[in-house]
Length: 372
Length: 190
Image (spheres, each protein chain N blue to C red):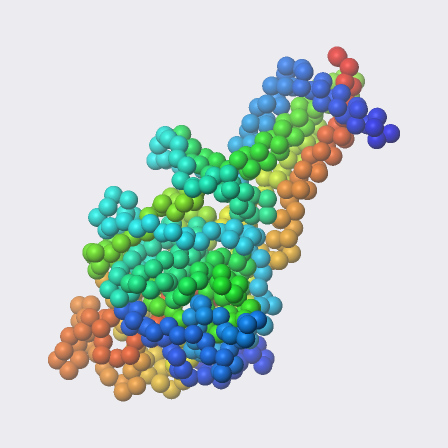
């Protein structure tokens, strides 16, 4: 396949705001050692009735601009047909060791995280019924979130609050609410569109979409979420009439549940892209292309980036590559200047990335760079 | 007028439920409808490997069972496995299902009488069946009505609003159908 690098400007008139740079850009270091800090009222952050911004969840400025204002997204919010907390988050997760009999099958999709050396895996077949797991990992209070309708798994620092499922969707994407201020946070952009945090961004850490067998192989000391959630669900079945391995039903093809807020038919709506909010703008790389080419070198707003496939976890990583360093991909590793690197350990600045269905990313960031 | 119609409906229901063949039909249809309703809202699952057993993993079942999972669906508090059936037992969903099933069963029994009675008008035999459909479509998955996912229909706010009214509309239709049928059945013994 010939890589085609294209740039698309915002479709909605007046909606495109110039890319704002990399202030407080969350880096995808993989070790979760970010320093979550609170919003600063002097920077125009919303404040609560006491004149102080809420402490939790920790926020930052949005790393890049969406193709829509918060108000525009709020106008597009729609009930998903369930009441607030009708999809119950997991607030007291129970984990087990990798070798335990309650662990999932090797081919089951899990969302893996590693924070301060603490590796955790969240089986999709459990999280699909809850969408949010409020937990602690590596000493940090965090939330691991998954939206089945957009195929996105993302992790957020939550401070001393928790996130819940609002029952609202925008662009078919989960809108979370925080239990401190009741602000609304669409998962993909992770920017509040309603409440005192409006306009602020959550602080994010990387989540890896992989299989249990691959995750366990890389992180043998990992813990894995069990089905002991305190809720009654049939965890062996999928509530969205589909499945993964192989992808079937809703997850395979067809239209999103709700019409995307921006139509972009350059790719099949459910195609999986590796997406990143780079300091120079949004970037989407078709995952099947990355898998095939192993290393790709997209340009975002004139700046060089490098994306690398990691066959160990069937994932990819995105790096800023301002000096245009070249790496040779050999047997799943990268070589440069006589040194060999693992795909997740290149001597470059890594940018947080996530897997997302095409429509989920392109509708929020219509001006995204695309490598496909 | 209304009182007379209701009185006649009550008498027709009594007639339908006291005759063995129509009573049997009411029970059979009611049980089938209940199972269908629980299946449609996701509380009844058919799959291999569930085994046999009962589990109640929730901490405070009396509180938990009041939690809403949809416009008119509620949390389950226990898992009842009887290979290959798995019931996620929600007391309120089951109560609602039993009520609907009773309405449907009686409708069908009265329709049966309407068809078989030589002195009845012979109309309305299908009204109970038609009235039973909306409630079956009201089940929701996590973020979406099951019927839309199964049929691959793209949702809209208007459609979702319409779907939330399916259950109350279904109940009204079933009750209306009973009254309609009641006017067309001779409740006196054949």
